[in-house]
Image (cartoon, rainbow over all chains, first blue to last red; front, top):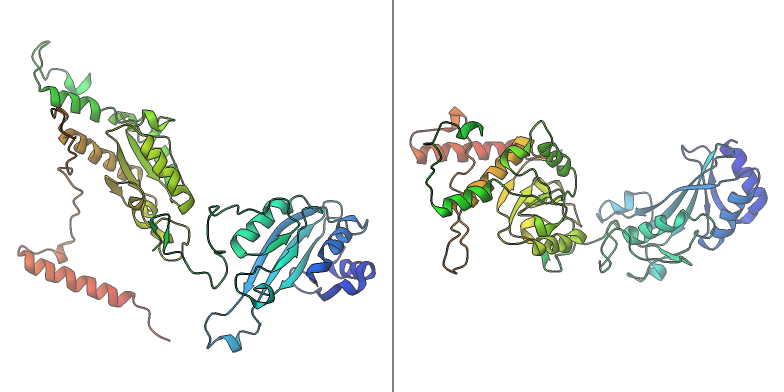
Length: 176
Length: 210
């Protein structure tokens, strides 16, 4: 199925839940609200014409220009994007779902933005969500076991955030 | 017996006990099976038939730190791993030796500036005896490092009447010959030449502003 057809099927199924769409990108995608994510994901998985039975990966993109001179020209407001890459073994097609988030919940630094977990839809989401939480600082609500997966359990901060500051010292080991 | 044959009088050999112990110890350094990253591949090559670490008696890679004399830290040590490396080091029996193999373990290497999670040199975690630079080092370089450890063991005094064992600095060090344009019989002139050459290199390396 072409990406335009996937989007039209999605729109007929989910209607107003699709906030934005782009069919002519290299990876065609739709944008949904965080609260509608689980419903849209279930449609993508269960609809017989879509049948996205595999979650390839979850990525988080941090849009932030640290240089205050370049910030007005950057062309984006600071925000996070959670990107879900899906594919279907049955129909051999692929698709992308994005969720836009603020960098911090309610603009309070340290309060992680929240997204519902997709573990109940695709079990593969488990470790992907743990990694996204660990490195990029996105809180997946409803995840069965949201611990850090790559960095140490007592690590402070989320290293792949653009404004992350390297630790000066970790358990007596000089950081730089 | 190869190289021993025909060197000595028949059936009599005289040496000091200390030298005998040192000879036995330096010819049976047992490293620990312990690889962290890509350097470990090179360490395995050293153990293989082409470079054949067994020639130096150091080919018996032990699967437990309690049977090992030498820890070859081969690969990037990250913060999460550091406590484990230290624990393995603590479990080794004395006398124990550590080789820091590769750029990452010598001082952070390619992760020095932008690696948030890499220990900037394993000497921040365990005491290091020999540094083997390279990314990764050639197998010959690691063999050189093990030979320096052998030098160190040869120089150790074992029979100390209860005094703590003294670990000497290796007698031989790696010596690099300078290119002829940087050498001078007068050491001060040679130093000036080398400093000028370093300065020139630094200027060459600074990026031109657009």
